[in-house]
Image 1 (cartoon, one colour):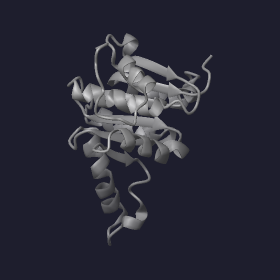
Image 2 (cartoon, rainbow, N blue to C red; image 1 turned 135 degrees about the vertical axis):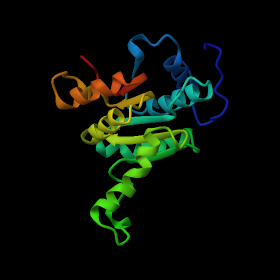
Image 3 (spheres, rainbow, N blue to C red; image 1 turned 45 degrees about the vertical axis):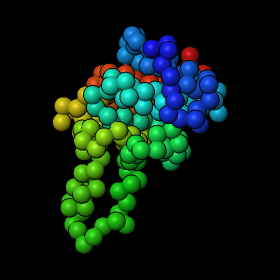
Amino acid sequence: TRNMIIDWQSSLRGYQKSAAQWLCRPPLPMRGRLLADPPGYGKSRSVVAAVRLRHELRLADNPCTPVITPAIARPDLRREIKTVWPEALVHILGVDEAKSQRKNESTEQFDERSNSRWRKMLRGELGPSFLISSYESMANILDTAVNESVVFDSLWIDELHLLKRGTTIRSQVARPLMGMTRATFCTTGTPID
């Protein structure tokens, strides 16, 4: 994989391409890699490039990548994903199914319709996709994945330092989600102890 060439995206800088290749390099110890650079170095684009590279090398069985991030960062990650992989579907859990889209439906009907798309993404039925969730909503992804026996090819945990303590509810939800994933990519711009 050292000689992998990422020729599909000219917006990546050389070090971002190198980071994407490093993220994909087998074997993945403990099935995960941490990319920790100062803010502004393009970690997000490197991870998206790594997910795309795994997809193009046919290393990915399930083309859906859950993304766990602070709620405030969700729109920024959507933009970064679309910059690197314009064809990929991106859905922000809890935002893209706004109540304003209700069409003379009961709450139950609306919830079923609005959840239908992201559940299909989660199962890999809609092709390459990213399902962005806040830390507070990641339990929804875990519950659905367990109920539907979903195994992800890749999981992206942004701002990993928020899972620093293993005793927090966030960490307790993230740990089984990582166990259902072949490759976990973690990013942070904050020093890790």
